[in-house]
Amino acid sequence: MIGVLRSLTATMATMMRKPVTIEYPSKHRKVPERDRAFPILLWDFEVDEPFCTGCHACERACPVECMTVTMKDNPKHAEGKSKRRKILDEFYIDYGRCMRCNICVEVCNFDAIAMNNTWTGHELSSVDRKDLVMDREQLLALSKSKQIRPWVPS
Amino acid sequence: MALLLWGIFGVDMNVWLDAFLRLQIVVIVMTVTVMGLIYIERKFVGRIQMRLGPMRTGPYGTLQSIADALKLLTKEDIRPATADFWLFELAPYVTFVPVFMTLLVLPFMEGWFVRDLQLGLFYIVAISGVTVIGYLMAGWASDNKYALLGAVRSAAQLISYELPLVLGVLAVSMVAGSLNLNDIVIQQDTVPNLVLQPLPFLILLTAVLAELSRRPFDIPIGESELVGGPWVEYSGIRWSIIFALTEYAGLWAFSIIGALVFLGGWEWPFGTRDFWGDFDFVYQLVLVFSKSFLLILTMMWISATFPRLRIDQLMAFCWKILLPFGFLQVIINGIVLTYVEDSETARDIVLFLTSGALVVAMAYVIYLATRQPSREERVGAALAARSAQ
Image (cartoon, rainbow over all chains, first blue to last red; front, side, top):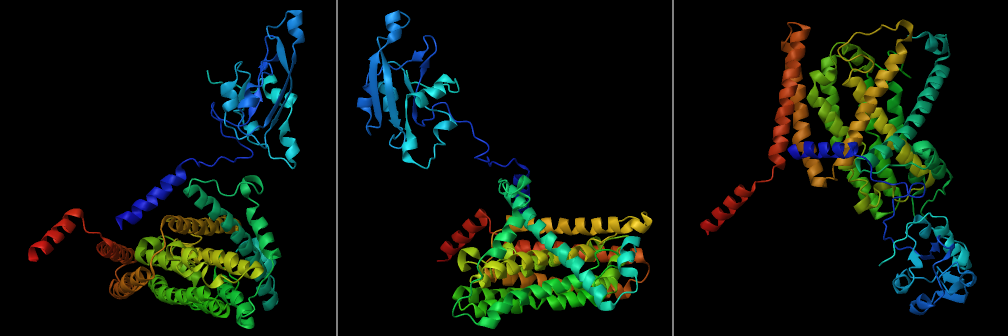
């Protein structure tokens, strides 16, 4: 009998509380700083070029072989503006194949690659698998637009 | 009565046309209310579970009921090959028509019925008992063991809880001295019957929850064990008639009855009336509807709180607690109304005291029946049993 009244007050007290639901597609919860979505490349704003030198370290370490990297001579080094002798030419990551293991970030000697820790890394559904193969510009876009605070393990 | 409605209904109209028009109004109000109630219940229960409830369809999900109705009406109406054709097809209407017929005698404003019956309350009690036949028809005709089990359970439950419902209503009509709902409300112009008769109110609330097979008493429906009770095989429009219309129209009808019989209907609680002159029907409507919605929210609150009872608990609660106390209330009311003749006030006070004492007694009996022995008592009993060996 007392339990009945107590349970009634319990439900009423719960009703007064704020609902925990977040209406996902229209509202996003904050993503944690160390969230691991898919790898992206970072942009060096000091010399206006990518950090990546195309050294293939990540490509060789990648367990699922989802990356393709090519390297070229850095024209800015010849002009004396940059310390990087080599710079990346093309960079492809197949997001459909990547398993988000973070190994590429850990092996990178230049802190040039980071995991996407924003919601753009999670909402990638597409009709065609080809759309999930990202090229150099797509990989750099997020960092270039300064919409990300990359978390790189030191 | 108000000028507005006088203009529509006061003119010398054919009796059948008049009844037809009033019916139309009741049907439209009922449909809209049912849709609103489904939305309100989903929102309310959602909040109790710390969810938001429907949010996507329309602003704050307000169009959810309309979307649901469209979906249900356009779905395929499936009948099992082995089902009994006529019983299966007619069962939803047999369940729905009694609920609809109870709406005919409800005064939504002072003196505004579809039809004014002197035995209104008796008529409601009699007609709402027919619902169980629809449940049995559906369960039998579906040719499905779960449906039949649900139907038999609901027959047992509805017939059992019919009795406390009748007794609760009877006790109040003794106090009011009438079975006409209009007269019962007018009798409450100073004190609502809830104060005079708290025990019948509690009995009625419980019995109505059981009659509607709502959650603490939903063993006939029992999603987790019977998949959906008598309605397992129904789909589309038939299912929506049963579920949406019968359940929520029943909820609404019974809460209007509760509001009229116990909460004083269109009368202000403890207050005066008639200060709006010709437009008093506005506040009358508002009062009747807000009181009934208060009851509906209480029932939803109770439904969202308690888990389903076992069938023996359900039957024991009806036959061992509600029914004896209902009889006691009726007998005591008879004695009080016969022998306390001094004044209206003295009679009211005696009624309140006796009924309140019965509420306390009932609470104590329930407490004794449901009490778990404390740890000390259990240990003591175990020790006594051991030393006896």
